[in-house]
Length: 304
Ligand code: GDP
Picture 1: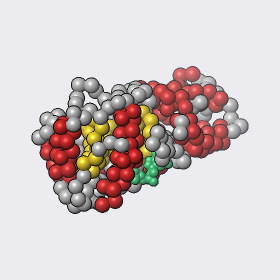
Picture 2: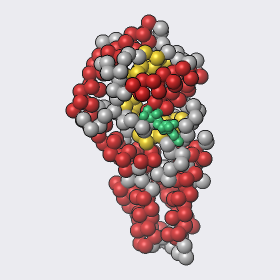
Picture 3: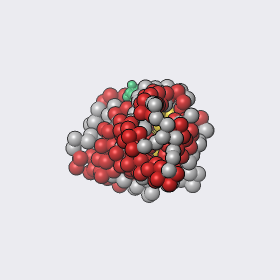
């Protein structure tokens, strides 16, 4: 799916509400701003980020005295782009990994059902297309289905996967995976880990141990801790981001299922609030439905 198509539902919902809010009004006044605030919050941009955007528009209204509602679209686009520009992320346009880390180790975290396995499969496919040698590690050993589902993707993309039995030590799987990757002279390792939020201390301990054991093989691993969030869950995604960032150092985000949801604003809110780069967005179930998140493309597509 293209970004435009993926964001279609979010856009339609947003602009239907916005058009209603400005109907019969030529000027941006307090009432329009109040409605806009509500619309942004209900689009899952998040309260903090919404308030920032509203404040910026209020300042413009105060300065320009007269702001026409017909300009609101353009103003929103500018202010949201401005907000995202303050975050040093979302500048990439291609799937890339640093050339000086070999193997480059990505540890993937996130709760079940958010699209973790699918995202790993899609990423593996992108890297493989570039001619990179990819190895997957099935360190989510809590559920047999998690291992089998990842195997399906490994077979589909045709990349090797390291696995052990269900219930085995995730750190041991991670260790084996890195060993295997080094032996094979692999470029990228993607490790799936469990995400059981109901036991936070266990989760923290498990992720810490996985990291420590990986460092016995590659001393600065993991190079990226990628948290996968389901964009269609809106505020739940914020909550999960909060909990995972408390349990481990998360270095980047993937927001999935933006197709078919009206909650696309979640990408803007999460980028702003957590100051962690959104690196990838999922816009469909297919193997090519993962995109590198580019804030300029995103804003352009949304406000087109
Ligand atoms: P996991 O339990 O987190 O590993 O989740 P899975 O990768 O198994 O994904 C759960 C479901 O979400 C599957 O049916 C996927 O096809 C679907 N899914 C994952 N990413 C996306 C996406 O970007 N868009 C849509 N529409 N579905 C997705």
